[in-house]
Length: 112
Ligand code: 5GP
Ligand code: ZN
Image 1 (cartoon, rainbow, N blue to C red):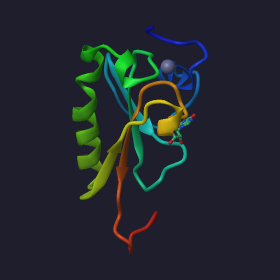
Image 2 (cartoon, rainbow, N blue to C red):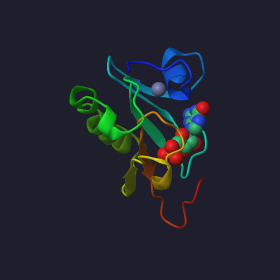
Image 3 (cartoon, rainbow, N blue to C red):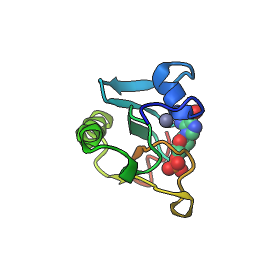
Image 4 (spheres, protein in one colour):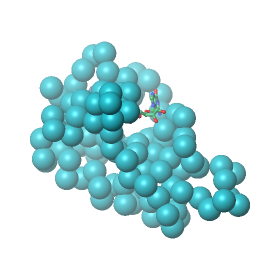
């Protein structure tokens, strides 16, 4: 499915819900997470709507990691996690594929 009317991330892509946009191309959208686990926590998503990684065509996924890499470089994060949850048991809450890019500050830096 290219887009879902009830999906919160599809609404963000369309601009119907505001987001802090970091990057956009024909296939990919990146924005700040609304509840960041650390300073610079971003989400990189395909514009193609699908709940799980296995629902997304390869051509819609190929740009994702290079964008996550650019965001990691832009934050200056030396240490970071890329996280991608699939399904409720795996802690997925929003059913539109997304890659978390989560900088890991050292103890002194914290969220500031
Ligand atoms: P999940 O647990 O599904 O892997 O993560 C979903 C992520 O989406 C969470 O980190 C949550 O904070 C983020 N999120 C949920 N709704 C919104 C929203 O409306 N705007 C933004 N920017 N992030 C959202
Ligand atoms: Zn969607």
